[in-house]
Length: 123
Image (cartoon, rainbow, N blue to C red; front, side):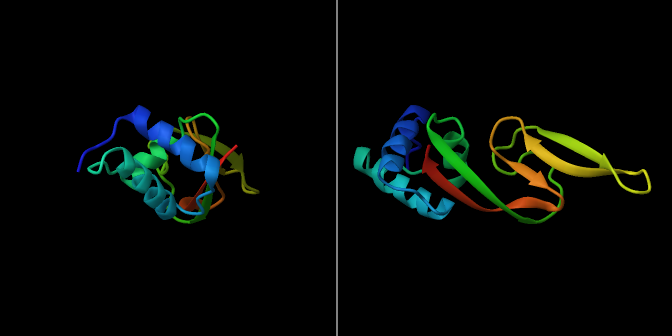
């Protein structure tokens, strides 16, 4: 197994998303790995690395669907810092309302913090 360079993966992502939309990360990884193996039979990429590279490719939209889960310290999608937004409840206590990633499209709200599904498409 060889790890492809970032530029090769970006090119393959753009070419693949011109033809179709991936409804899940698993489907996207499978499609990208098939295309990468056409370039070099030993190329392979993991879902996490593919997702992180996808956020930096122009013209690629990544929709993140969330589910209940614990409050993350770093972005669960790309590992970047999270910006916290607070509100006050009726008793005057601070309550975490929203988490926003500084790098990707992740936004967690009111208890829905954990990514459940990713959808990849061209803009």
